[in-house]
Every structure is written in C-alpha cells, then in structure tokens.
Amino acid sequence: MNGSDTDARSLTKQAGSVRIAILCRHDFSHLEPGDKLHTYDKIRALATQVDVTLFLPRGYAAREMQSHMKIVQVSQGLFFALGLVLALFIHRDEYDCVYSRDPLLMPLAAPMKAFGKILVIEMNGIPSLWAEIHRRSHRIRAPQLTPIICALMHQIEALAIRFADLVFPVTERMRETLLRDYGADPGKIIVVPNTVDTDAFRPLEAGREETRSRLGIERKTVVLYFGTFTARWRGTDQLFHVANLVLQRREDIVFLVVGSGPLLEGIGNDAVGSRALSRVLQVGSVDHHLVPLYLNAADVYVYDLTQAAVGLIEKQGLCPSKILEAMACGKPVITPKESELESMLQKSGGGLSASSMKELVELIEKLTDSPGLVKSMGVKARQYVELNHDLTRLTQRMVELINETVSSRRE
Image 1 (tube, rainbow, N blue to C red):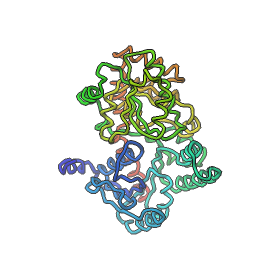
Image 2: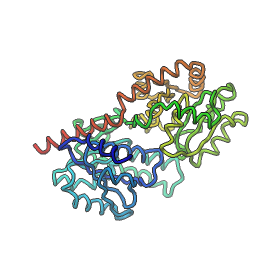
Image 3: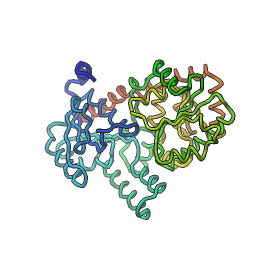
Image 4: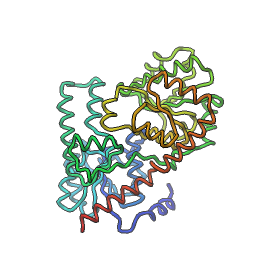
C-alpha cells in the first residue's frame, strides 16, 4: 500500500474514537493462509478505523504494519507473559481498551482494569476444545496429561471471560456454550460473525482464465479443496475417496487441491486410482495473496465432509473463513450438513449441503451439469457475504460496541 492509500484510509478513523491495545502471539514476519492471516487482516482493519497499539513478541511484526499502528515488542519465550504485563502498564496512557483473539492472553491484561481499561475478546474458537482434539489425534508426549492440560486451559478461558467487558463469539452455537459451560454474562456476549476481506476476495475473471490456462483446465469443471493436511481428525482423506468416485465416472471434472502437509501425499496415492490421479491437481502451498486466484479458477468449492469433529462443532458451531472466502469470490460451496451452515446457505442461496460421500458425489455432478445454476448461486453467494460478513463493515460494528462500552464506563 502506498502513502496516499495510507493517508486516505487514516481519514476513516473516527475523531475521539477508542484507542485499542491488541495482544497477539502470531509471527507476522511470515504470512501464510490460516488463522494467522485472518488475525493479521482483523488487526489491519481495526487500525484503519481507530488508533492501535500492537503488543507481540520481538521480531514478529510484519514490516508493513509499522506505518499503520504503533508496535510494542516484548520478550519471547518464558518471559513473554511478564514482559507483556509490564509493557501494558508502561503504555497504559496510550489505550482505552485491550483486545485479543486469544482468550489465553487476556488474563495477563486483567490488572489494567484497575486503571479503567476495558477488556475485549473475539473468539474464533475455544482453545481448550481444539487442544483436546489435537492431542487425541496426534502422537504427543504424555498423552495421559491431556485431561489436566485441557482442564487448566478451560479455567484460564473462564477467567478471561469473567474479566472481559465484551466477548465476541463468531457463532450462535459458541455463544450458547459460553453461557452454559462458562457461566458468562449474557449481556456482554455478542455474536459478531466471521469476516472476509471482500476487496481481496472477489470475482477475478482475468485471473481466472490465466490460472486455468496455466493449469491446463480451461474446459473442465474444477472442484476446489483448500486446506492444510496436518490434522487427522478433520478426515480430509474422505475428499480423495469422493474424487476417485467422481473421476471414475466423469471425464469433464478436475479436482484442484491447494495446500500442503504431511498427510497429503499418502492420502492422495492411497485413495485415488491411477487413472483418476492425473485429474487431481495438487499445487501445494501457495502464498496468501494468490489464494483468491485459485478460488476464482474453480467452479465449485468443497469443504471437508467429516464426522470426526462433531463434538467440536456442537460446542462452537461452524462458519469457517474458507467458506466465506470462496463465496466472496462468487463460487457456490458444498458443505457438511450442520445447522448453522445450512441456515446460511439457505438464506444466501449460495451453496448446498451433503450428509454423506454419496450425496456429495451427486451434488458435484449436479452442479457440473448445471452451469447456469453454478453462476446464479455464485452471484448470490457474493451478495450475501458482502452484506453479512464484510471485514470493514463488521469491524466498524465491533468498534461501535467497544466505544459504547468505554463511554458508559467513563460516565
């Protein structure tokens, strides 16, 4: 972004608006698709609307962040917690509110409430639930400690929610869990849905044709899967079984797989027959700014179809940013049958749900045979995301809620 763009965006900051301190542990010196990038986008979006001071470990800030916000770097490793508490105290006159997407960091900011600061947590997930699934699906040291570790994390989360003045879960299901399992105050738990940068993720016709030409898939129906092949619990091997079923029956379909991880090679070779394997294009990990081009190159986006994470979904709901990014690019999506996802797809008209591999195969073939339906669903998907999940719009909503809370505290 050049200087004039920065100046123009800074004009959107509200005069007298709240000043926000952001706590983060992500290493932004190297960006890649995933939660790190979504956190980076949210921080940048906040910095365009209010004055931001970012607290993170030394050496973790991306170079371009320096011109958009103040950066306070603290010690890494064992001394990070102590350094963060001390830094928050030293800079206490420079912010009104402490915000983080990591509830495990928020108790470190609790002492700042004594100085009139408000605490805000945005919850894109529940760390203790993710930790339990990860530890039970991977080889780890001392697996017998899993219940103790997860219980300790749960207690820290409960402490963070208790101290927080506002908590923004991204789904209604997660809000219900916070009220039921954490005893949260209903008045401070407000759902703010997942967001997507609709300027970056948008229909790109020229980029679509160029990418398809480079991959040699100009006249094929392209089914895209985008993910990281590291977590066995996601059951992503099912996608390759689906690909094998589809490609054995159809010659006009290609599966485009974007992402990398230790499970990818073994899954692909084991699940897909040799005849079909040539039409499963694995492009590996791509730079984050290229993701919209691959989404645009596809005709249909498929999200993981798995029952392995049922317990997680029941607790925190499901509305992944990847689905929203595909919809923002004007692509119909096929998702698992899950109540919140189904409701979103019904409201938007931008996708379909499958309850089994057999049904997923049928839906892929249905969309392949209905290019007009694919186009109309893609248009509706884009419109829905612009209205309900736009990054700038929902960030502004968060800032308004924070401003109201700070103002009421001052009064």
